[in-house]
Length: 431
Image (cartoon, rainbow, N blue to C red; front, side, top):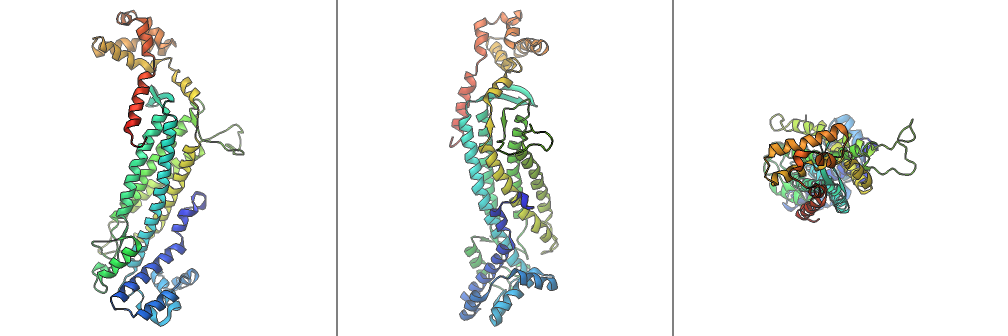
């Protein structure tokens, strides 16, 4: 991922420095386990632990010749360790190191993502509470429907955020799998006890069955779950983009001092963060297809997955981490205009109360379809002539046979909405 959309915290996890240090951790832990089994002399183990170190420049030099990253890595380590290096990588294959270290990186990335997902949940929760009773119009098909509250919008996102956190925890846990099983996964040249030891030290679970690699269905789940969480960010971003439209302007992104919206038009205040988030979620979805293609490999393994994973794991986690933190800032600093919400709510001159009138007629004993047509007649008069809906109802002599003016007046109230909103908030845990 390009630096423009990268936070250092996540980039460090996927850096060459961290990758090679994790490779070294796997190799040294395997040596420790072999020593416990009496297969490596204790003094040789101590020499390995003292002398082995990562030299990225040297690894890259060697790889130019070997065309094999693990061999280049081990060869570089051997130059530091000397004679005792013969015990390094004993009975292991490249993927024992690659896949186990990758799982640790995925675990580290997952922990950072969960930390920030919890921050987003908290910000959404606080905004939901703040705007719990801030009335606004609800829209279906982009058309005014009935009144709702801005707090309910936030509460909806908060609940989905919690579901995403739960899904991510499961996916990250399922992907925390290590493997030290040798060529084609049979443990022919290495004890399963080595795998158990290494995985325990790294906070991983040993794969129950592997070939020469950890099976990629767990990777599919990992990336797919991140992409699902991304759709929440896109959902929020899309709503903000709509609400910030000039003719709507019910909410907008914070516009900082000195910020510019257009190179040509000085008046512009654009929802650039939300637009950026919407765009980058498209990338997340594309990574799902790529990771799915990696599951069906030839026999016990090939390396068609390798080049894909070198890109999609850093890019997917870096991208999601970036837009997640950007969304936290957007929601936390969102500017809300309750007065515009009320103004927009009244654009249809009271038509948002049409269902209340319909149901009141049904309560009086009318057939629903007959009542619907009666109310629709007044509603269409409001649409066509711009007459306030309340007036067009009162002018409807057929309808007014069933109502007094006072009863019509009482129907144009938000009281019932607020009562039900309280119920919904009470049902939402922790609000």
